[in-house]
Image (tube, one colour):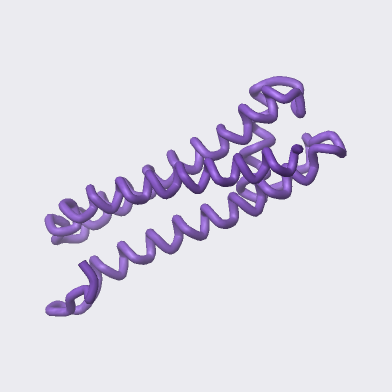
Amino acid sequence: MRLLAAFGLMALCVTIHATGVSGAIKRLRRSAERARGFWDGTALFIAVATWMVLLHLAEISVFGFFYAWRGAMPDLTAALYFSAVTYTTTGYGDLVLPPDWRLVGGIEALTGILMCGWSTGFFFAIVSRLHRAPGVTDSHP
């Protein structure tokens, strides 16, 4: 049952990320056309990085609230901290899940790796688009 819940939380995180990245793409189409100089590009990168971090914090919170709700962590503060350390695969080890919850923590870590990779790929796509050679256009709409 906990494994099923872990996959449900993973699906919710993917949904949050997909929604956030899709929204960012819509806004970036307008902003990227106006980003002409170094400072414009830098401001755009800062905005994208901030947005990506906020998405990750929302996803960390999904797992953290779940841990607190189900009593896998002593309180919400500990649950959110544990979730952040697990999602980012930092893994300090100062807080650990009870043995029957540990697979959920592993699913969270895998989810965090995937979501961070997705953010990295998205960021790379933006950088590539802003710095491509003049006259080169995308082959897709």
